[in-house]
Image (cartoon, rainbow, N blue to C red; front, top):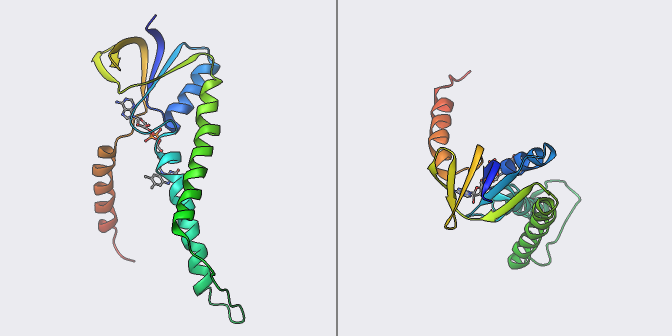
Length: 163
Ligand SMILES: Cc1cc2nc3c(=O)[nH]c(=O)nc-3n(C[C@H](O)[C@H](O)[C@H](O)COP(=O)(O)OP(=O)(O)OC[C@H]3O[C@@H](n4cnc5c(N)ncnc54)[C@H](O)[C@@H]3O)c2cc1C
């Protein structure tokens, strides 16, 4: 019952790419996600919210500082709460359409909410249950992973000689 061909840990873009491919290959797959909602970083707290808010900032900035003589733009109202609500609505819409709906359509993929941890090389525990698989894909990007990488990249940047 709890045996799968593949277990995918995570629920972001990486996990979804793997789940869609596994479904095509008709692999009996379990997708385990906990922490961020389905969609992971990009749709919930990364790409989508950041670009939505950056675009709002860009519009405000350009309206005031576009630098084109002869064009005067007046910003009549700036309701930041409304801007943020628009961002939250967009995130909810994309999460539902691009992730939740897609996952529901993957007939070979079972989804559970739970924080996965390995109890043996072929077994994880999540939400008090144990699940076995032959193969695992860990698509659970953790912020800690970013830190050493970012530090390394900063060091590399400082080592590049000035031209
Ligand atoms: C502010 C910001 C802006 C960004 N903008 C862009 C952009 O414009 N373009 C771009 O290409 N990329 C952008 N990125 C990067 C992009 O969001 C990430 O590269 C991408 O989301 C990584 O996807 P992922 O599936 O690997 O991991 P994530 O999307 O981080 O998904 C990991 C999932 O695993 C879950 N998880 C973690 N541990 C466990 C566990 N033990 N058990 C179960 N589930 C677990 C987490 O809750 C999460 O849902 C941005 C990132 C940030 C922070």
